[in-house]
Length: 633
Ligand SMILES: *[C@@H]1O[C@H](CO)[C@@H](O)[C@H](O)[C@H]1NC(C)=O
Ligand SMILES: *[C@@H]1O[C@H](CO)[C@@H](O)[C@H](O)[C@H]1NC(C)=O
Image (cartoon, rainbow, N blue to C red; front, side):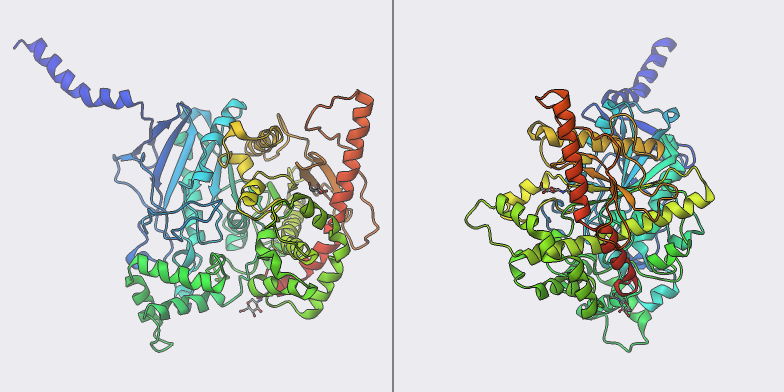
């Protein structure tokens, strides 16, 4: 063989694997800081995904319940990040309509899923949105079908403002939130939140290699995912900064059903230890208990923790193992921290709630016959320290007469003969729970964030509030025989992800709302302000000098259309807010002349203002926020 021919043969042999890699078109990202390459996969020719980017070590064995330890692949490695990562141990069954079954679980679960527009280059420096999944601290992982980021990222591209989406696994239930004095001594409480922080830190440190901008990093989530985003701002009393620059919290304020000073989580940890034969030793012998709990196989521990949680808080065991004050990561309870200025300031935020956010928390509507029945779910599951006098005040603030139209709206939706007759007290309970769990704490922390940030920086872009009054999920629940659930918890997130129904079957008004909601979200990821291209005009909620005059709330969707409204604060019921001067954008173009149209818009606008005032959020929330001690906030 001649020399030239031999060389060509060698080249062909060497070239073969490279050619085949190129043929699959797999994206490869070199992360300079780690000396590692990650291989991803192209999907739908629109996004590139890195499904299993491991940021912390396996949490089994001695690392169970311990803070996460950063994972560094060997230098020079080419990591195949194409396959889906396992979920952390959690309830394996589906919780419709939000969560699917989770058969693939492991304690080696601390992975990120990074999704970016196809062809993103490191120099693009795109804003990054990091999803901390919700799920009541019992459920949620990066491959959840409803939160598949494909449409979100593709829509951001067609909208002209591409973003990178990252989803983050963290430990839930007892694995993430066990509590024992010995663990506290080892600074090992709140491990699940420490996972989140480690994942966010990984994103901040390395996302630039994927084409992301670490200075425009939004932490967002629904429910517990929003609450965690809020609480991270208070981690270490705000003294160690936070690895993100903005936050978008959907029905997830800092004070939601979390008594962080409670010893309940310790009680639950011991109960699970007893179930597994790890308790029963002398109370002092905690080291043995911990060792035993670390040796139990994952499936047994998960099963015991879930069984116990469901008994504690039926039907799904939500919020049983929860974050708690540990004199380290979380130095005090939420409202004490933020009132004292112990949080990271200058972080633009959006807080939202849905119009019937508390409806699922109230439980079965037929269990409400009298006013006294309102106490049952609240006392049992959310606020057992409220006294009868507190209930008397709540009942006076949420009189039955204010809920006539809720009953009428439900009657109008009630079609099937099996749809029950529902008492007004159910609707009162649902609204009280909405405000206790979601609304009032959003307003309270939002106003503190604004006031205290602006004292340091007059150019702080502000905090914004929204109230969503439109839902695609309602249809699902009606189909499942629950027509009383109106604009339920979780209605907002599908307007970002668009996975619950095929887009081709979405009604025009939902497509329209999804477009605007995503536009606001993406604008916020770019600038910290949801205003801009494609979004309805949305003023900040607590502009300079307005603290005592009320707050602006964006009403999103529903019969009165999207627009900005003024929420009166203070305690005077008769105090009227001025109708927003913002011109409301109509949802549909009317078949009437423009003068008539202007009149209609004005009428809708007045109606929206009246309806929002009917919620009396100013006086109701000033009372609820005054209960912070008793709520454990
Ligand atoms: C919170 O927990 C503490 C300590 O267990 C308890 O004293 C307090 O009553 C609890 N508050 C609520 C609202 O449950
Ligand atoms: C929310 O929607 C309901 C039902 O469509 C309507 O009756 C109510 O006035 C709306 N409230 C607000 C504040 O938009």
